[in-house]
Image 1 (cartoon, helix red, strand yellow):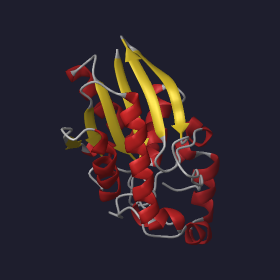
Image 2 (cartoon, rainbow, N blue to C red):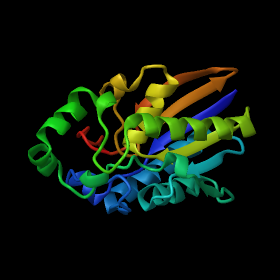
Image 3 (spheres, helix red, strand yellow):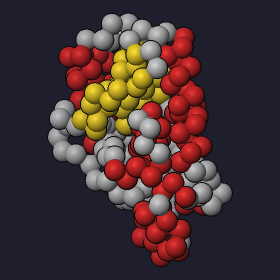
Image 4 (tube, one colour):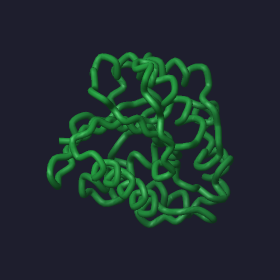
Length: 213
C-alpha cells in the first residue's frame, strides 16, 4: 500500500487579501511560515518511514515544503510541475472583488458550475486534474509501497481529490482545502481511499474558503 500526505501550502499575503494567485510566485507570509512549522510537527508525529517529499515549484509551496521537512534533516525535496497551481490566466493578480465586478457571468459559472469554466488565458479544472493525477500515478508506479508527502495548491488539491474519488469536477466546491491543511490518501491495488480530509487540527486557526486558489 502507498500512503500519500497531500498538503496545501501555508498562507500568503494574497490569500489574506483575497487575490487570485495561480502561477504568480507569491511567498509565504509570517503566519504561513508558522503554519508550515506546525506541519513539520504533525509529520514528525506520523513517523513515516523513508518518505519522498515532493512539491510544486512555486515559492509558497517550496518554502512550505522546506519548513515542513525539518522533521527529517536528511530529507530531500523534489520539485514536480505536475502539482503547480492552476493557471488562472487573466484573473491572476486580481482581487476577488475585481473579478466579481469585471467577470460577473464567468464568476457565477466558477461558483455554480466549476466543471464548465475555462479561465480566460488559463486552463480549466480537468487540465489540473489530468496533470496532477498523472503525477501521482507516476510516483506510485515507481514505488507502489512508498510514503509520499506532496505540497500543492488549493485548486489543484481539490481537482485531484475529485478525480481520485470519482466525483467529477462538479464536486469541487464540496471539498475544503484550508492553508497548510493535511489530507491522507491510501492507494492499494487500483483504489484510492481518502483517510483524512482538510485536517487543520495542528494549526492556530483555519483559513477561509474564498472562491479562489
